[in-house]
Image (cartoon, rainbow, N blue to C red; front, top):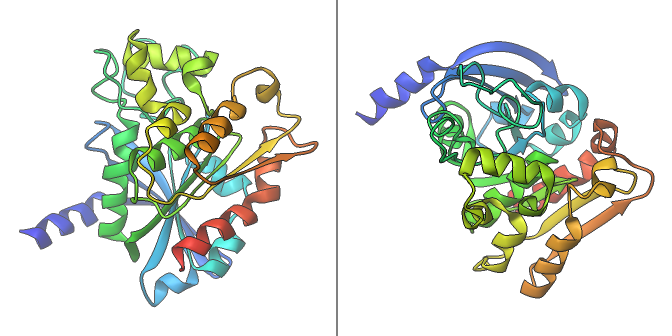
Length: 292
């Protein structure tokens, strides 16, 4: 039965594109998602090492308004991923085309803004299950179809996706070997983006929001070793606007004695120019644990 099931999964993946890059292949696939009840795309980079054996896998979670394309076309991560022999997977940021009333009304809620939560509100709960998609369905799909070692897995992301990366690691002790983030939403229960998204997806009971807030999760983290790297641009408009709140997260980590390297980068903003500047550092951070 198992092999039939695996074969069925293999057939369900449709390749959208494939381009050679730094000796490896940057591919994009489409599939029918069980969790999200819609067609989803994800990008996967297969380094040269993947031709001869199983490689560790690193998941990238993108920010508001992004698709699977932003990271693969703008971050310049391929050379470092190729050198360190890492498969890198970048999914879309939300379900699309679900015909939910209001899904296209605003840039920071609905389409392109899944927030990596499993929605519980009636309108959204059928499709908006990005947390389960990125922590369960997608890793299963990747391990069934590509030469990866599912025991060596890490996660990183940017902005809303930085929030996603942090909560994935904190909610699943031991599942990810390492975690890092660029300009993450560190305390969404206290910022406007978070309040809007969490109210819409999870309802008005704020105690439910805390299950998807990195600063809240750190306080009860049981503590298998986690080494966190965060880069934050000092000129980031969303930092000064109170959307990111890294200080709250750092304070919570310090209190729990969870190691976090926080680098405030002079002159950098929230853009992919910032990400491209420091992406090799992040790949190196993950390779240290994934290739150990």
